[in-house]
Structures are given as C-alpha cells and as structure tokens.
Length: 152
Image 1 (cartoon, rainbow, N blue to C red):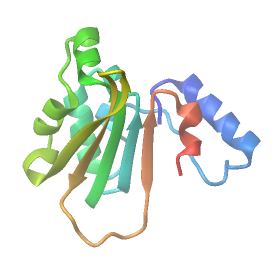
Image 2: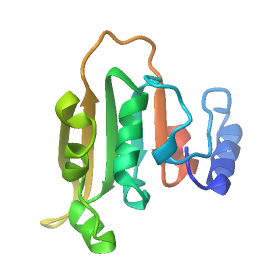
Image 3: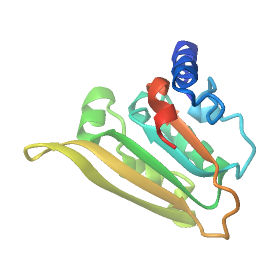
Image 4: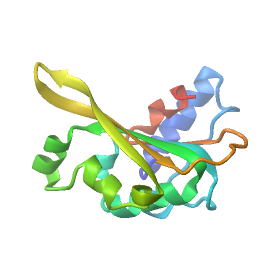
C-alpha cells in the first residue's frame, strides 16, 4: 500500500516482471483510513513511512483495528530524534502509548542502524492480545511500494 498511485503502478510493474504478480497485490491508500475490515491481517509492516504520515495517531489506531487478535505490527523508520528534528513529531514510543496498543497489547522498539554512536533507524514491534491465529495475512505499507513485493 502506498498513498502515491505512481508508486503502486511501479510496484505492480516490478512484480509482473519478476513473475510474482500472482502472489502480491498493491493498493493506493492512506494508513489513517485503511479500506480493510476489522481483524483482516496477522501482520502489518511499515518500512520507512511513519515519518511521512500526516496523522500518526490515526495510522496506529487503524493498524490496530485491522490486526487480528495476536497480530503484530512492525515498523522500521528513522530514529526518533530525526523525526523530532524533521517534523517536531513524537517518537514511536509515544505513538505506541497513545494508541490502542497501549493497555490492549504490547509495544517494544530498538535501534537497528547507527552511525558510530548516533542512532539512525529503529524497529518497533506492536502486538495485539493473543488469540489462536488463523491464516497468515500480511499488509505492507511502504514509502516506496516498488520494493514491497520482496517482503513475503
């Protein structure tokens, strides 16, 4: 999923060229208003897109809504200090605490990439409460959808 139609077109084209078009689907959409029913996915993944979201709190609430019980959301993004500098926005820890994941799930995060001692990127994992899982269904939200098909 990507908010930019041209990125979804590129991703669809790359998937077709690689022979993966029958295994993936790409959609234009906004994380703050996902067009999926409640409890649709076992995993939601966002790669370097959170810092682009115009309403991160609404995005987190929507991700929680579409996750099945026991589901997990994983985000990879710029380190919180970069986000604060760039947009005066809150970090992933604050987003997790201000979302449905707090109190009804779990939120952990860690730095994944550093330049010497300077943190550059993080990985966050947000979980809903456990319940026996059914079929695995994954939603990938990427700032560059053309690479999304590689994540399966």
